[in-house]
Amino acid sequence: MKRIKQLAIVAVALCMALVGTAHAEVSVDRNILPFKEIPCPNPVHIALNIGCGNPTYPYAPDFRPPGPNQQFDGMCGSTINKIVKHTFEWKLPSKCCQFVSGTLSITVKALQKGISHTSNDAGNDKAYILKNGTELWWKYIYPIPPTVTVGQQQTVTVPVTAAMVTGNRISFAVQDDSSVLSAKLDLNYCCVDDAGCK
Image 1 (cartoon, rainbow, N blue to C red):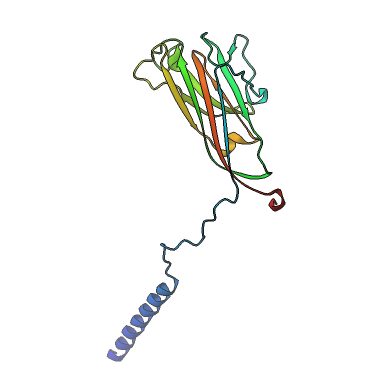
Image 2: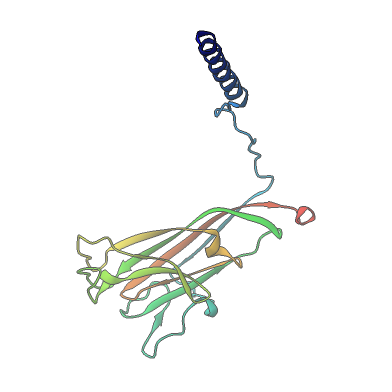
């Protein structure tokens, strides 16, 4: 009986050693990356802007049909209750371009005071990104509190996504008690020659 117990102990020890060896053989050094990062062969930067004195060019299919009493304004308007809409469009040097990153910065000025995000004044004004009639992103323009003062300027920065720039365009709208002073679009792509496109 004692001999059997000794053999059992030896067998267990041998199994544990084998398990330890197996683990040692498959251990992975997590400090070593499995893939090497390759720099983009042809980085492309798109920079577009619109400001006072520039006409707006909204791409109609991106926006909802206007309501019966809805009114619109251009850049740097001075009348409340008018929405500003615009679409940036661009061309890329190749059909094989991958969107990497981007921002859209919209600077506005309050045309009237704002009490809260639910008040019927500049406080409830929002900026939107739209595509084919669907809202992809929105944000209240003014941080409240404090209350919004007439003439207050605010810049809203949109973190652009690939979905926002499909079709090589991005459309934004700004409500309606705020004047849009400027909008600046910065996009980064990685492109390759059309011959390498599959």
